[in-house]
Length: 296
Image 1 (spheres, helix red, strand yellow):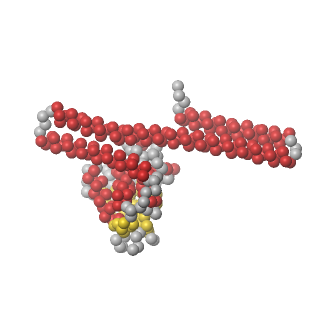
Image 2 (cartoon, helix red, strand yellow):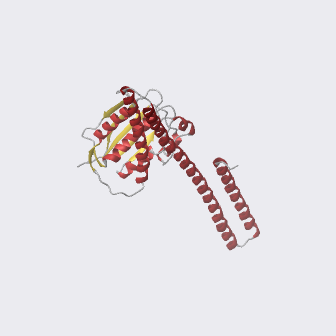
Image 3 (cartoon, rainbow, N blue to C red):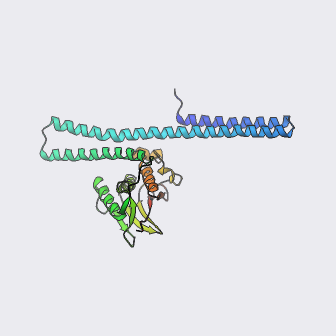
């Protein structure tokens, strides 16, 4: 039977530790046996290289195994996100083809199929955008009103998830139009990903607040939810490619692990940043997008 990744990781950690211990033992033996200063120095340097090499090799192996595990999780997630709507669309098409339905039922089926199509397009866009972030594409920035973009994204999220009007609350604290230099599609993608994340990780009643604030020469878009929250140890990791929160939450919340990675990538392309805060699991979370204000 193949060895599981966890066992393999443990094996390489133990192997590295044993190698370090053997190297130290040999080093001590060398020092005791040879009294000459030159040989002692050479021995210390030589075995220091061995220890460093073994340690670095172990760290590399562990990181590669974890990265491979994340890639596998990503492939499984994307497969699910693609296969589910395709199967749904196929089922409705077969029903339309084989049964004589009323006009009302047909319209209902068409609506569901359009929603599944939007889900497919969104998944493909996420994967493509994540790939483009690593490329040095020419920037086609223009002056944009960030408040208008956030408003459009909030309306889209309410429509897509069939949310009540008071579910998402937008508050603009800026004293002048919140304008930035940026790519409109990328900024819409970043804000939409923040909202999608807040909706996904809000079980039960959804209550999301979007704040637009001034901070020195920057503008902040702060999205706060009252959902699952984020463990303190994962506040920085959630912005990594393919990274998702602990396994217990992954079973309940589907996704590709690209949303916040895209948010951070877009923020950096615009000279800004993205970060998250949370009081812990079950206490909600706040994710902030920071962008330079356009002073022109």
